[in-house]
Length: 469
Image (tube, rainbow, N blue to C red; front, side):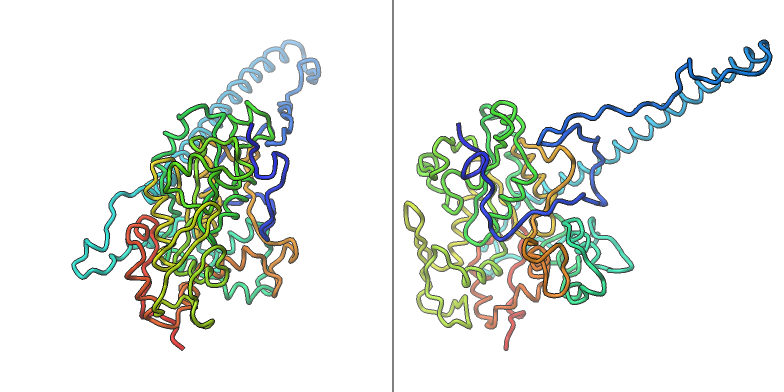
């Protein structure tokens, strides 16, 4: 039997510089859920409290004459019974109405994810007469669904709310520098839209009904520097495959650190995908795993590859200019565990890898790394439920933050990794920070895959925004 988490069923997920902090989620859009009868660790059901009514034998006896006591007491009991019944039915009506409204809101939210994730209206470069890539769909920024107007933090209130829900304490005075650095919610929406994008949600139902659900897994994929560890940790902390746990025991939660063919390995060769297994995935059938592949804004991803190239090799040029697309030889080679691939440039590696996932015929999802930062709970829940999984039974959500060394606060320089991520990925200025030559942005604009940019709703680079020094 395959073990669910790499390293063994009882092994903890490999550390990636990020640790967990559990906090009760205080959300404006949170579903009202019935109280759990126990979490995944098996907390026993708590018996319902007493209704508080006195038994007949303990009711005080009347001191009035017998005739009056019988007449008055009978009328009072009938009236009390009628009022009690009326109150109970009123409460039932209120609970029903609230539940109905919540279900409607949840349905709207899932519909927005679905529409954003599986849009089939794609436009390519060839559709444009001038040969340039088409602009991405305009972000729906007129109404900020999740942002709140807070007199204390203004348009940064939603960002502050993400930090506090993650267990990071914010003090308006001590953390002034951090608050100043945080993006506004409007900036985030202006770049990536108001809602998360998950591509491939049309395949959820088919995956759930193929073979025995108790044999199903949810695994993570993605090329280098795209947040694969973050998605894996979010899923391990918050999601489980109940059918698998019912059949094989509570330790078999069905969440895998990577897909069996290797999380960084491109999946285009179907024979290789079916036959190749990582050391700890020998018994996992590739057809029984839903792959959730993380993808990242190519402008930011290119900067990360310049700092940490992993198995990719190409001419970086000068240290102060990377990527440098003016070089005569941009050839990029990637050495995977079992084979090697060559690409026209480092940007074409991004194109090729994600086109193989986008065009795949097996069940898979594409998940934006930026949405793991700004919409962590919605995205984790969507991916989990697509695979047929369930979220934590106690209704809580565990965020992933880097607080082990720095404490729970964000004061001064002791920022958590999550706080830094919010600062880094929510600002358009930081998106263009490493690009000092407009020609590099022109190369990206003209060579990045138009279909991927559109379906993932990434904004095209604007060469006029180069950080010219």
